[in-house]
Length: 236
Image (spheres, rainbow, N blue to C red):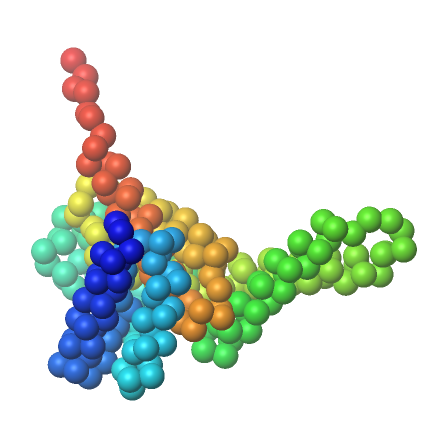
């Protein structure tokens, strides 16, 4: 795509978002994901778009209301009748039930907690890079300090990941009935979540859940596409 085409696409996307915001009074992360599906290519552009939207007074909210998606709802087949075949199998699957109950024990994060974890992860990355440059016994104390930061960053990474597994389940539910078992959808979504944790940059100006949504949806939809392309050879 040429530069003029990219600029035109960018203007059109921004105008569509502004129009939708004027109609419903806010935008969700899903609204942004639909117009910027490739997070690897669109992250920089998206941060600019979100800044413009906020400067114009547009509220951007998370599409996933975690509190509105309790574990019982995920396990309840009557909640979505059109998915009855899939949810019936889920309701009798102890593995899924145990996973969801374990997941629900991790408290949801406040914005301040999310930012604190992201900062600790960033400091851990920086410390890891500095460690690679150190050599010699004279840096013993500095090396110990950096190792402590690296370890703290890893703990923060695990905390941020576990606290967002509900987001994975909530997104995975949307893709049930497309040829990939629910647990596999969750597994793929978790891979996307971990990728999002690894690449998240808190200085871009959007929340982690917004950024993670891209990666989760991308890994899930690719898994579904790969499954659809699989050639099944009949066994005689």
